[in-house]
Length: 596
Image 1 (cartoon, rainbow, N blue to C red):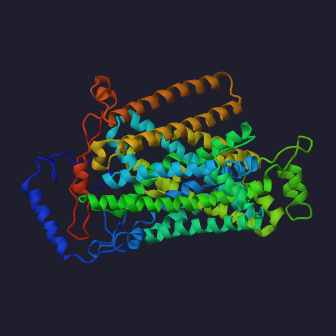
Image 2 (cartoon, rainbow, N blue to C red):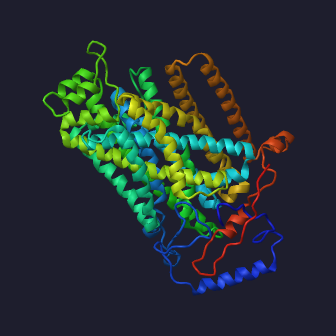
Image 3 (cartoon, helix red, strand yellow):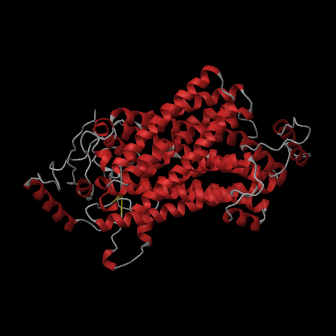
């Protein structure tokens, strides 16, 4: 079924009570074809009926080990490996790397436990998003198209697009700084910004070589980041005991408000709203027979293992960055770094970047560029260039996954498919215009300080991914027997409340630091009121999805919140999404429609 088509209503064919005998004949013919098909494995691809992002030309089949009675299969795990690692790249984008640097420089190892638990919370939310895609065959944006009215659906799409563009701007900034470092300032910052347009298109052409090769490319970029930042970790040699204590002791003694803000920033940087939409779509690249409960459970199990491994790797890479700058920058002043840089080739750059206007007592305000200079002065030019390579890999990989997230969002929310080059051109131009202006006419500090504002903007968007995810995975009509249990509902809701509260605190602090006054402050207040009201609307929809009879029977809720008709049935998911690799496999057309 195309992402542009709605699910069958019961009775339109398949399991519904109105299914015809012709459907039964078709089912028997399909069963006969099963007996004659070749033995399939994870290297065999399926051709979907319509062009979609990421898995437009092929799907990976899962090897069938049932006949051998194998419990855990590494062959199956390998077949499912890919989507989780692509998802984990959002935990390693330049915005996250800079947040890691700043937390290490401000708090040393004291808030490493915040990074650890933020990653665990991210895993729990990613698990729900992946389960939605596996069980229903629809990703989060496609489900929003079916379960929300037109106006809230459009608002959700706009909010997620803002998050994607904000993330894209961070990736442009990170890539431009990396190119500036690696070229030894030959390529100016504005030139690096322009280069990101070309290199993104170049990388996107690589998906024509096959799905698994594209996933291998992303795995290679993650490996480059691990090796680059791991090298910095080894040469800096932080105290391992302090690192372990910071990870597992959830306490922060003698921490001031600045450290608290850094801890909040870590949570906001790690959990990206558009990443939930991305992961729920990436799992559709594997062919899963939804007619069999066992196969769906198996897919959920292996996807969870893969996501756990991927996020563990991302945590280790983030840990490397925090520890390196906690060991080297904590408690240091700008003058301390300038002294270290004496007699080094980057001394003049250090004098211009590490400026002290507080009589020699100004603590370092870490950013990606200063981090490279510090490493170069402390451990040699090789360390600076390796740092640049790691940042470049982070920016490039995040750019590509952000493009896919935008494609899925547009396909789902708007029931619209654009050519990928067109999609990339629009979002990248929107991200590049303000970034280019800053790079051309401002200082490096202005470019890097934009990351804090962008983190605040993306933090505001988190409810627009978390609330729909919990709502849909807690709805029995959507998930069937895979619906969230009571414990899952309570834990996911409480953790989401905590994260949203933390992120809102971060946003309030950033707004206060901007010292907004007059008419602009009035606009901010109006936006805050509308923001709260829309979140309340989503919470009401979530409660109705969870089965609150009082809300479901309310005329107001039925008219303004719930869809006019239930356009999704779990029974249809089980009968229409299993694909068979035969030339005669054609998918029945769905019923298109849109709620008023």
